[in-house]
Length: 636
Image (cartoon, rainbow, N blue to C red; front, top):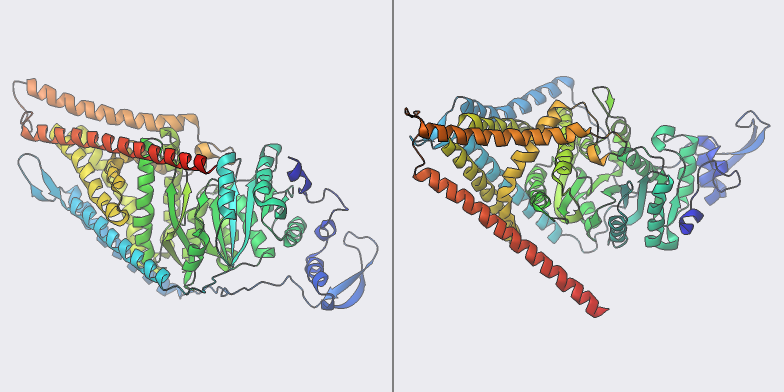
């Protein structure tokens, strides 16, 4: 702990320490002090004034500057534009009704059981199925168009392109030491000519948090500055004397910075980092990431390149999972690929990505300057918001009419929960954020492509329709229909997986065909839970504020839901068995015929093939790891 202790300073601890005088000066004095120390010619005259706290008069040199100068390093100033109120209302109605018209006919058709194909055996192909297939096909087309557009821009990039001055902001709370060290090492290895500063904000300054400052200094060496100001910037205010003292201290730093501020949550930690960049480190853009994320060396460069377009206010990249240790994390890792390279890529074609991912995102500094205060003070139903900080930042950027895009050239590695309960808690938190921000986001559909409104409505309605189909099949459908529906779930996943295999040339993505079962068993109840407890701001198992989801919510909802699923399947099978023994057969009963055998065998066969494929993937990964370790040992 010794290296950390030598470089730690707290505001107001020592009247003789550098910066103490700055902390007790007015804004005019602080502004002049910083400028005059660099250029004495800035002083215009001197006057006798009363002391700051009513003490004896002192000689105070006045400057022609009344506020600290704003740094402009190439980024254009952001100017908000407002349309007439009547025009705004017309645009909102047109966009919303237009998107609704794309979805409603399909829902109505399903409710009234309008089928394009229907047979006596109970097979049918409805309008809703056609709609979902068309949706995924169009989504894939837009995603491909975005990929080709980004490829073309990168291919034609000027070799001497320098890009925007960018700072990297990392936030974390009592992170796993090894993951944290790897994160910092990846930040140290970033390759970007216009990278201004790497800053780490630790959400805590207690003894248990000091190891993060120590590791930071070990990674970045003597040029690193580690400081524990002893306050939370949100609590004291960005214009307070304490804040100005902090800005002055960090303005003198020339290397990476680590701030251990008083515990307040991830949003408060980001707020502190943003304000330090805004007030004392000149940048055009700020990239944000988490302390458990491993960044590709070109991540900052590729994200900053997307801001070359002056209409783009924010961008995100490809977030990948490294700890695919079991079926839950493995299927999540496959799902991540589609979430970014298909869904966000499609949204990026329309310049309206709905969420800039927390582990890998970049924002223009001037956008942050405009939205930072409403972002940190966000409330929902009168309660201060704690999670969903990345989605709300994106929403506020979209609100300003700025474009938000995605690039597959920037990527990072992060981890995902490997336990079912932790995974459902995480999905519940994300679903709450989605529904809450969806209500907020709907007010500026008119500022962007109609696809933004359509996709928001589709993602809101689709789980409800799927829930209805699922429960109806379990409790009111036949055994044949249940088997057929399980097969259709795999086939739909297979069709979607084909796109990933074509793009990546990696057959492991075929196993995403089984993600539908994880969706039904875990994500479905997470969405239900999110809607029922939308007012609850608890983080769940990842709480930074102690506002954890209660144990009964963590366990009762997932286990209760899976008991309903098992009960529905048991009821369906029991109903079929009893019908086979009844003297008078129900009209729907046709015995365990060829179609029952076919769908049972295809379902069982698909599961066996999936298990074999996953086993081969794990074996191949283990062998590659062993080869890598052997190569390292031979070099040593």
